[in-house]
Amino acid sequence: MMNNYKDKSKVYSSAKCGDFRVVQYVSHKLIFIEFIGTGYKAIVTSRSISERTIKDKMLPSVYGVGFPGDGEYKPRFKGVKSKIYVAWTSMLQRCYDQGFKNRYPTYIGCEVCPEWHNFQVFAQWMSMQDWKGMHLDKDIIVKGNKTYGPKYCKFVTEEENLIEAHAKSYSFISDKGERVDVYNLAKFCRDNNLNCGNMCQVQMGNRISSKGWSKAI
Image 1 (cartoon, one colour):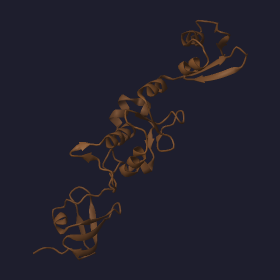
Image 2 (cartoon, helix red, strand yellow; image 1 turned 45 degrees about the vertical axis):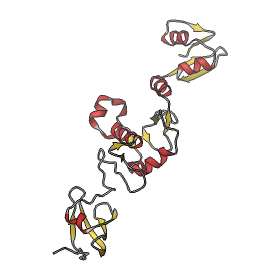
Image 3 (spheres, one colour; image 1 turned 90 degrees about the horizontal axis):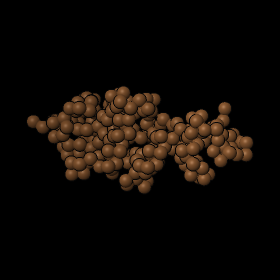
Image 4 (cartoon, helix red, strand yellow; image 1 turned 90 degrees about the vertical axis):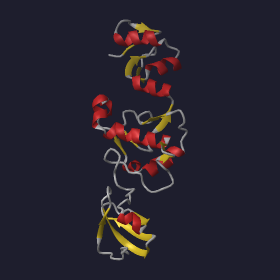
């Protein structure tokens, strides 16, 4: 005899997403349920309840924090992960995969803002960016930033990403006697018609000055 699932006080269990209750029973093909843990609501069938195949789209399932969310953006198309989904999971990996951070300790202390734990929110933001062939960066807008979020992130070319990764801070005394703090020496030299190699030698103390510029002490 088919269970009509009309008892709202009863708790049901899914195979992988926890417990839920029936909020409203309309027919065996139209049942409104709510997961107890996350509050996620869905419309299901009696068959999916009996087979315990119901999914909680708000349950963290990616590196302990990320969840697919409920919306138009699909993680996969014809079985292949979308590029937006790959960008999202890679971002979460950098922040929450301990093995990854052991290999790349520069990501220790990094985090993803809570709203981007939801794939739908991140996907909507990324879909509005010029991202094709680009890399997601978190610390060009705000130097030293460790939080991935819409206020701090942008997509950059591979060249920009490499330049930023190798950029360092330097301090010089200009040809006019003024102290100048420099971040990204290569770009600074290009913008000011200076020889980057000579300025590196000045910074290392192997050269006194270059075009009147000297190392700040």
